[in-house]
Length: 356
Ligand code: PMP
Image (cartoon, rainbow, N blue to C red):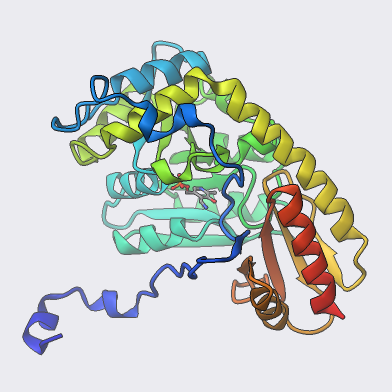
C-alpha cells in the first residue's frame, strides 16, 4: 500500500490479527460448530419460488414476517421486541457500537467467544476480563468486584460458553444482572444443545437481553442471529443497524425453517445423542482430559505432548478441528465439533492414532 494512503488508515488496524479460518476443502469439517447434516429440500433455495421472493426489491429491513414467527415461537410479550442481525456477530457489533461512548467498558469472563473482545476493541470500548475458575465456573466474587470497579456498560455471557462448553450457575448470573447498571447479554448460541435459557427471565430484569442464532441448528450459511430485549432498547439498536442488513432469501428460508421447526429440533436432539457417545468414547482415552459439554462441541486437553502436533496429525488425516492452544489459559487444548456418527468415528480413530 502507498504510504500516503496508509497515513489515512487507523493506526490500530495494522496490529489486528485477521480472524483465521482454515481452508476446509476436502476436509471432515469439525471446527466451526455447524450442524453436520444436509438440510432437507424444503429449506433450499430452489423451493423458494420467484413469486414469493422478489429479489429485484430490497429486503424488508424490519424482517416483519420473520420476527412475527419468532415472537410466536418464543411466546414474547408485547413489551419485548426482536432485532435480527446478519449472524449474531453483527448483533454484537451493533450492541458495541450503541454503547461505544468514551470511557465505557465491556466485561466478560475469560476464556470466552473471541468476537466480544475484537469488536469491543475495534469500536474503542475498554475491554475487561475475569478469568474463569479452573473448572470453568464463573469467579463470581471477582465478577462482582470488577462490576463495582469498572461499572461496565455491557457484559457478554455466553450460556453455554464457547470454547469451554459449560453452563454457568444460574444464580451467579442473576447476581451479575442484579448488581450491574449495564446491559447483560446472555448469548444463547448453543441453547439447542443445553436445553436451558434465560428467556423466561427477561420480564424480571430491564437490563437483560437474550441473543440467539440460527447458525448452530443447521442454517449457518444464512447468517441470521436475533436479539430479544425490551422495546425501548431494540428501538435504539435499530437506528444503528444498516437499513437492509438481512437479505430476503435468508429471511425467507428462516421463516420456512420455523414453519418446520420440529425437523431442525430433531436434528439437534440427534446431535446431543452423538455428543454423549463422543464424550463417552473420548473420556476413555487416557492421554487426554475431556471437559463435559452442554453444546455441540467438546473441549479437550492433551496431557502429554503437544496440541499443535495432534492438530497437525489430524489435519493429515483430513480432519479439521480447532486448535485452541494459543488461547490464554487453554494451553494444550483442542476443540472438536460434534459431527455425524461416521465423522465422529473417523475423528476418534485418527485421534487415537495421533496420540500413539
Ligand atoms: N456467540 C457464540 C458464543 C458463538 O460461539 C458464535 C459462533 N461461533 C457466535 C455467537 C456467532 O454466531 P453467528 O454465526 O450467529 O454470527
